[in-house]
Length: 266
Image 1 (spheres, one colour):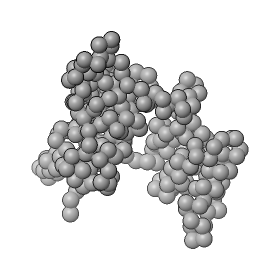
Image 2: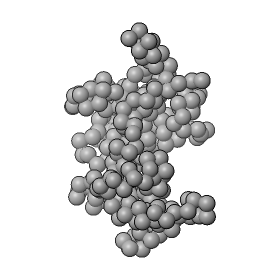
Image 3: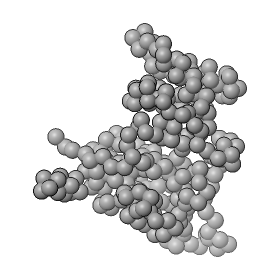
Image 4: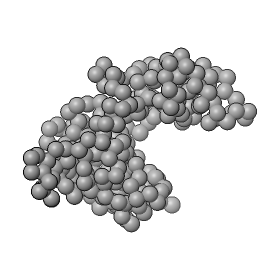
């Protein structure tokens, strides 16, 4: 059987309040968590479909907050799935904190979508530029400084490696250079997977190797040419994009083999 080494911060029970900060619905997490806790105490999995319970709780919370239910379905589903994976005790033990600052909380869905759709200005004579165009990659929409510039037709991992604004390895050992964790740069290890929040259409189509490997790693199984989960070392940019970098990854291939051999020697 093939093996996958887990790296990073992958214990869901340790990040129940923080694993979904990239979702718009996170700003309603305290209310959603409280409502889900109450429902979970009496939840009968044999008599009620989970999908029905998710919609029921989302509608109840939306009514109390006077919101459109569509803003709460995703975060409510995450709450129920967190209970399934981490357990009700761990879920209840989490503080239920909302982790956004006041500036970002005030943004409407329309504002966020507008920001994601916006491309960089290439200057007065930008229409004459070809390969020398520069694009912005945003890797945390809740941090104004969490961006880097990269070249047209450059893959996201190489672009990230030019970012020297922080001591990345100190922040996360998986990040030897730049904000995106990297290991092989050839779609062999699975380290550099990212989620695409905006601008998926501005990335290159998934090539055969990326499509095969990303399925093999268990990240996504799709035939879509521009899916919402990509390997950053393979996805080239042709416009500004917004991504989320997972706090964990699986590692496959030569790196895993070297770790296993090192452990056997010790």
